[in-house]
Length: 374
Image 1 (cartoon, rainbow, N blue to C red):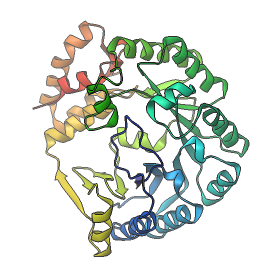
Image 2: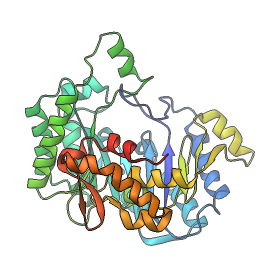
Image 3: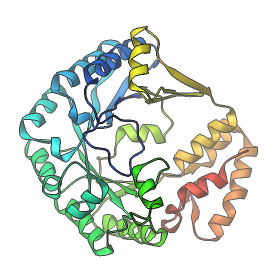
C-alpha cells in the first residue's frame, strides 16, 4: 500500500520557528489548487499499487474550503486506486476548527485530524507567533470530538525557553485529560533562515537548552507510558489502534507520492522533490511539466535511508533485513558500530533488531548518523 501527500503552501501567519515552504498571502490560492489538481493527473502513473493513506499537509490545509478539498480528493480517486478504508488526514489549526467546517470535512471524506496545538499556554503561542490562542487550542479538540472525529492527533512542542517543566507536564496532562488518542511531540529546533534564528542571533529571544529538552523528553516518556500510550516512533505516541498509518509508511520505506510546491516523493530507489516556488510551480504545471529534481539512491544510500527511519521506531533496525537486502558485510558492520551504544546503555538487541533504549532515544539522529554506511 502506498500514500499520497498534498502540500498546501499557505498560512495566515508565519510561525517564528517554521522553515517549511509556505506563503502568507492567499491571492494565488486558486491557481495553486488548480495546479495541484492537474499535477495529480500528470503523476497518475507514479504509483503502481493501491493508495492506503492521503495526507493534507502544509502550510495550513484547513485554510482550504470544502469544495477545494473535494476537488483534490476527487482527482486522486479518479486517477489512483484508493482503498475503501483509506486513512485521510487533514492538518488543521485550532482557529480554523468550527462546527460547520468539521461537518463539511467529515462529509468530504476526512477521517483523521491533525491539530497544530503546540501548547495550551497563551504565552508560548505568542512567543511562537501562532495564529490561535489557548482557548481555541482546547476548544478545537472538544469540538472535533463532539462532531464525531475519533481519530485525532495533536502537535506539541517542548524545550521552549519560556516553558517550565511544570508547564510541560500540564500540556501533556491536558492532552491526556482531553482523551486525545495520538500525540506528536517535537523538541523546538532553531532552523537557519527562520525568524526565530534571526531573533536569537540578535539576542531578542533566548536559545534552546539541551538539558531542558532532554528533561522534557524524559517527562514525556514517563507521562505517556503511564497513560497507556505506545511510543512507536521517537516523536509519536499512540493509544492502541491509533498509530498514524501515513507516517508509518514513511518510516517503513513504502512508496509515496507528494504533490504541490516543495512536496517530496519516494519510490524504492529514487526520491524526488518539487520546486519550492508557488509561481514557478504553477507556470510549469500549466505547461504539463512537473517541476521536480530527482535522485537515484545507491545501495549505500538506500541502506542509510532504512537505518535513519527504522532506528526511530520501536521495532528498530532489523539485522535480518540488512543482511537480506544488502549482504552479510553490512550486517556485520552495523553490529560492530552499534556495540559501543549497546555497552553505554543507549541501544540493545531485541529479537534480532537493534532498538534504542529510553536513554538512547534522545540521541536517535546522532546514533543513526554513526551507523550509516560509507
